[in-house]
Every structure is written in C-alpha cells, then in structure tokens.
Length: 172
Image (cartoon, rainbow, N blue to C red; front, side, top):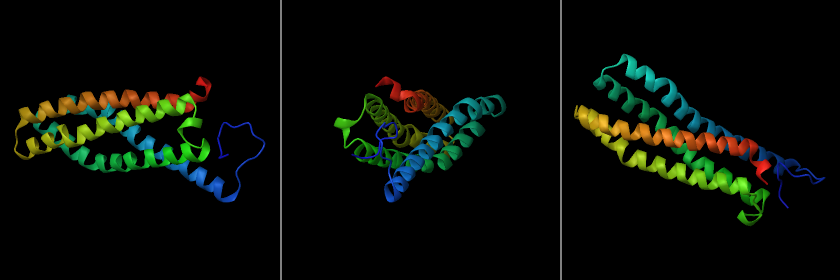
C-alpha cells in the first residue's frame, strides 16, 4: 500500500518514495498558494485600491496587465494541481476507490475551479484585453465585472478547499 500521510501503519516510506511524496505535496501546496493567494490579494487588496485611486481607463489597463502577468502562474497551477493530486491519490490510496471523502471533495471542487478559470481566461479576459486595446471602456468594464464575480466565486471555493485539505481527515 502507498504512503498515506494520516496512516497509522507502522511503516514509513523510505528513500525515493519519501522524496517523491514530499515533492508531490510541496508542488501541490505551492501551486494552491500561488493561485488562491493571488486571487485573495487581487480581490481583497488590489481591487479596492484600484477602485479608490484610478479612473476606469487606468483601472481596466491595470487589470489587463495584472492578469497578463498572473494568468501564466495560474496555468502552471492548473497543470500542477491535478497532476500532483492524482499522483497522491493513486500513490497513497491506490486510486479513487481507496480515497477518503475529503479527497473526493477536494478533487471535485478543484475541477470546478479549473472550469471557472478556463471560462474566465477564454471569455471575459479575452474581451477585457480586446476592449482595453480598442479603448472600449464600457465593454472592458462589463468584462472586468464578470471576471470579478467569477474570481470571487473561485476564491471562496479555493478557501473551502484549503479548509478541507487541512481539516478534511476529520470528515472520515
């Protein structure tokens, strides 16, 4: 049986298994921190500051540039989170059948988050970039409003997943 971090078995992984497990956990947690932490910063700090200090054209330009720098990191997270998560599911639990409820919850919510991100990236973010390039501030404002709503939803889901990840073993 693979390594399960909450396992009460007497054995512990050695050598390569321990290094692989540590690398999976580290990559998974770092990817989650980058994505969820970035959303938290953008939603709770950058957004209110931008609204308070910038006129709409400057604000929309700031957001288009900010997303242009943040979204490549989200893409990396969108690849790393499922890859490392499934590596842990199959390595520790032998697949989904052996995985506890909290793992299924994290997986399901993670899929929802990825789908929301894909929509943001391929729909309102593209409209925002095009609107800023064309100085169509009304269209850009509508796109940014949609992004804000979806990022808010994803942030709530991401924080929920973090709570499940840290306290999920208590669910059984």
